[in-house]
Length: 293
Image (cartoon, rainbow, N blue to C red; front, side):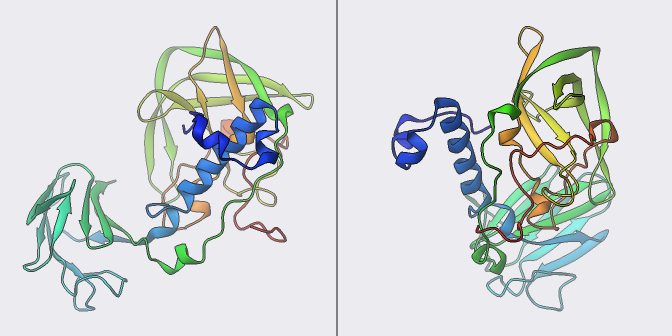
């Protein structure tokens, strides 16, 4: 993800970065893109609420009289109502006088059969069902958390942690259930695992496919977790295997959004992807004490 080097962007980088070797420059460019996305108007610091609707009719808005209270002073007192009778389908009825947009088009009613984003002013309401519940997440680009956010902190680039791992494909790709931080779980398509030597230790990490199927994701926890890096673990993407090999660059290992904002729901690295070997590469814990952000 975000691995495409753009010449114009590269030429605009500071001289110190441009002077680095091409691989290091690519890693630094990737990190810059990651930092930009983390601090962006739709980044993790903008999530201000996750609300759960009851079955039947639930009102939603800023006013405290609503069933679902939006904790943003600029939200309309009454945004509308959500009609849900259980199952995977609900209807969002927009209150009279409120302008709501879906994919840039005005709507007065939204059928929720899959996750949908509803824009009201600067706010984004994402509604959908999960684990038998109807949930609404609200993002505010002007949130206090975003205004005070600092960019991520990284270990220095160390190419020893850019490894070419052996790839073992499962005879048949399998679905694995991975727990989430909210107590629920999701199924992921796992095509196989990567194995490699690091500091004299053999490490094996099982991969899952990204939702678009174009990359591998590794959810892992190493010996730095809980003090140098995020306690639950980190994520790493890699290109699909080629000729029985997969390139894993831990300099691009990054934190799940729940490290920045506990309102997010993130996969928890499975036990088979825990290693006591330290991998001091990639993103450090946020915020990292004693560091300038």
